[in-house]
Length: 424
Image 1: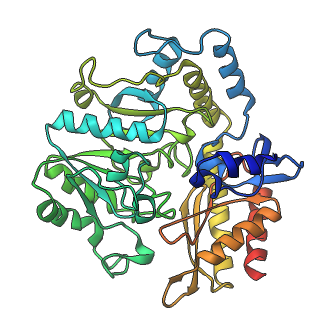
Image 2 (image 1 turned 180 degrees about the horizontal axis):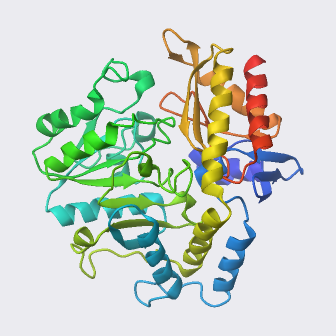
Image 3 (image 1 turned 180 degrees about the vertical axis):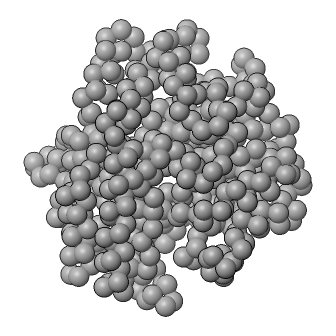
């Protein structure tokens, strides 16, 4: 029985039917190889995870050194050096006054912890999130997710959650145009608080760049306005950097593009270059609301994953991968925007750094989404040795999120193959 046959017979249907029909066997740098030896330029990075590249030798070596000493003891019962060192490093590299970390296993767990901390620190019980947002697949994180495709069939959800309009300029929920709109989506935070809540808001939670929503980049002014309004009403700002963090957007953290400092930040995916780890970090004042026993994770803060994360952070800085993300991302955006002029099926090209979305439509005037074309492009690129993602609320956005070590020539190859796929 082949691997795909075993997936079909033994994996849950949602895991078996959604896979790409290629069995990956090994990977290195920006490439993966399937079981038949075919090579693929990986432009999805395991959903924006292996930012430093697959199997980076320094990260592997750091993990191996730690594995030879200690794999698990529960770092919340018996302290370990890698956990302490990583918490210190996160306090040094995150924006603003974020100093106290809790290490978890995943992005969803980090978001749940951040939500709980915000409620405990403020004594409030409500949350505000964004339409088209995505924060995880647990009941709590789906409760603050504003993405219909991710939420359906699993309610009811937690009460006390309100949603503001998504800052999606291409499909503006306010039916306006940037920049003459007055950033109405951000100003709407006032209406959301006054008309959808009981005035008991603990936090406003948002992704600086919405990943699963289709690589949606808010206007530059958005977060300054929206966060100011939320804070005026006593709410904290939880910044979800699970997908956008660790150099993905050309800055270490995406919120640094927008000039706002959160009280709480959640991280995962790119934090450890493929090793399973999540974290949330808060200011001293906010973190002080938690007492021993209020929160715990048996596997959270695993010393092997923490050692990998420390080395990964060093690699991102020392090998210039954050700067490369900004430069290569600018290259791909400019090239694809030129392609857009020749292909009416491209509605919009958007992104920051190497977090890029190409929204495909059947008609530019009506903006009718074209999910079938996006799926066909993805499969055509796969046949040509390039792996990309597809997302967005209409499944019509081709997602280009390669490892940050990708070269200029490899970026041009992606552009050329995508152009050929659209032409065909």
